[in-house]
Image (cartoon, rainbow, N blue to C red; front, side):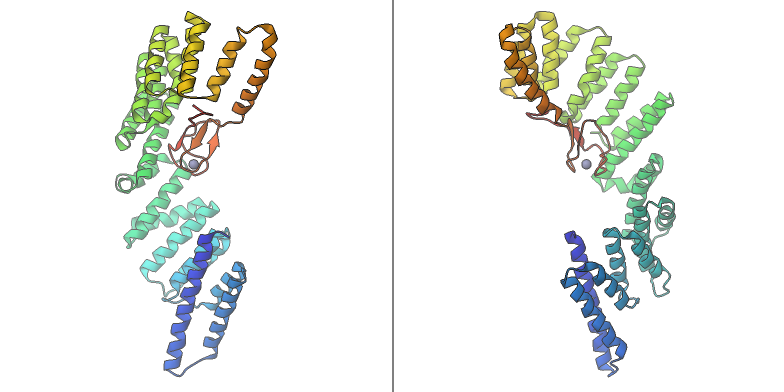
Length: 396
Ligand SMILES: [Zn+2]
């Protein structure tokens, strides 16, 4: 069982204990010790016993039964419902929260709190329309500011799951995103999503407007320039495409490796070999990623001969060791070594190829998710813009 869950059960147990103690004192004062009071105490200790014997299911069940719903215990009931949700027993959480909502003893603030938790239950169950109805009501007319903000965050999460980007933007902007950096980053990506939809529909004008908004919300949004480059490419403006891709270097140097393939393609379409070679030399001065080294080496090999390529890769490998660099260097050696030495080199190359085959190219900076493909939205932790190319000896 995860620690937060255990902690919550303990907090709930303490809360119940305090409430029962208070009840006991009242009974003592009025000399009205009732059988029900003793019964509640017994239930409480039975629950505690289950907890100490590491039987949390039975402990929670006993606590729920032992505790009468009233103004003093409402928070504990909410917490117990949340516990069930955290343990994956969301149906039970819904039953507890719905049962609470039907009680007339609830104040407006308590009722709002229960509605919020019920919305969380529905979201966990994937019943998004019911969650949306509850959240919509809370966002419109919630008295407690904290609950209203939590409802807005949930609403954003819900619209994101439904891929309703405009609706998510409407809730998050401008207030909510101001206080939350990750939400700001997300909002820029929602504009990018809308821009991509525009491009699909053949409307580059509205797409550009969305990209401009994305950059005004988050000037470090690499994806906005990535999509600008795509628009320019589709329009045949390859110089502008290169310009947009080069802007990514100023935004986030970690993302530079993704720009290599389209930049190479654009220079080739412009038939500008010297332009590409100058660009690569310039790039290596600033951030010598192995993909750039290998492309430059390959172009130099074609233009100036094998020796130039070998020298470049050897020099770069001394400064920045890289598995892919070693593998490429072996390719170059294979082209010139005598026949009787080929076998050893081929064997070595098989090893480097195997090592490289097992490596992912991208990793999420937030949760560590790894993959072959670049996702703007991490499929594991759902952070936007957190996945980056892997660098170092085994990566770029
Ligand atoms: Zn992640």
